[in-house]
Length: 392
Image (tube, rainbow, N blue to C red):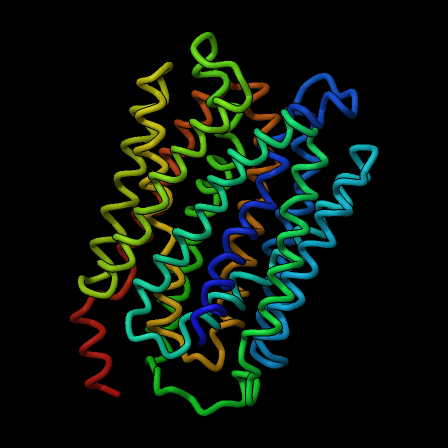
């Protein structure tokens, strides 16, 4: 993969997460524009976007393997840009819901297609995934900062228009610099990744279970942090741009955890590393649930480091255990199931916070993290993997 094309694939990951979080960052301004009294009442209108972000991964992954990953990435870049422009033209909550659902459908392309395309032939897949994860989460940081600036300067509609144009330009550049695929991945010769059926099934179950818990925590935090930040720092910081800057700083610091974890994945056993990170999530969410002010802000950095640090593991397991000829389809299935469940997080965020508050939400996230850590115990260890290879 040429360097420019690899760079654009990483930028694409940033755009993928940026687009889905513009709404969460600007929801207060959108609710005011649509004359909705409380921002919580707008959150259910985003459920279609996050549902299709997950369910759309199945056809996206299948098309990536059978039709071509390069072609699907062109659909991604151009489609995201057009969908974002449509969101900026909406005049009511239901129009917004339809446009965001389209945006979610197109955004489903990236994870099952872009990441397998990026790691093809990589000698250090963990590091490659870690850097890609850093790019994705920098998109989250940029969403927090850029949306705050654009909302204050030109309104929430501009916050969708600017990245929409950027995505279309990226699509044009990718078309020029990404090499044409000789054949779709499904038609290429297998790379020799083979596991016993029972071990492959067990690994897949663990992958799906941990993906569900990780996705729930990711969606709860990234969609709720903007309002949680405003609540916990109320009286200390109130300007939208400053709140956006503080939130961007949290994401920027936490994003580098993925690079470190990606490097570790290439050098140390996955199972104890993954378990330790998920256990840390459970502890930090519990401890930070009752804090406010700058103490809460410091704990937010720690728990987002732990949340982002867990992200590379599922993609790394796909690379390690699944042949390249079918990685997009396996990734698509995993993502569809996990994000299908985690879309409930977005749907329930507003009602849960409205009825129970953020403290109850954070205690719930602590429990989810502990359950995820328990699931990791079912992952095959290094000795079991070596024994299976000898039997094969």
